[in-house]
Image 1: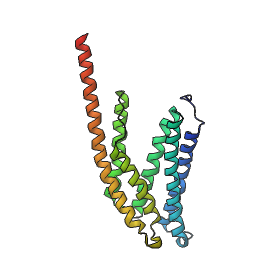
Image 2: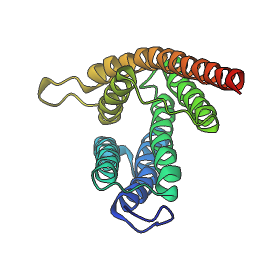
Image 3: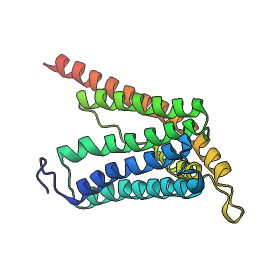
Image 4: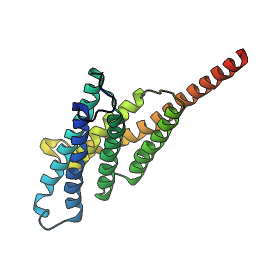
Length: 207
């Protein structure tokens, strides 16, 4: 088991690498959005740079979690940086996609506000010493979101594959899953808090 204050380990390196990739995504999409003269002839390339960089960042997200669980590497730095890196990656990508009119603003609001809400709930759960695992709907939300965003970034139809359409369908599914998973998480947390209160009352009654 690793030292909880350790910083230099493989999962943390992957997380930091993910953070480094975010500016590349934002720069590519911003250049397209601003229609810079030098970017006009390279719009397709910039779209694909953003899309493939996002895919690479998503892969590092999977790998750092997998390695941390496999080798039982749990550190304060990783626990702090990993969720922040994920939110920076997804929220910044969604905002840029909306600026490019590739995703509906309501969908962006649902996904962003859901992340803020779940973060607040997790802080509450942590304060109460309660663990509420990610549900199936939450996993589906993440999966569809990670498919939809790079498709919308690429914004191309190679070999008849309509990426904008598929990306739009995936991101709408992600918004639906996000709403239901937020409800699922809330119900689970409330049930555990009520159970905790009942146990405390029972213990006081015994004493």
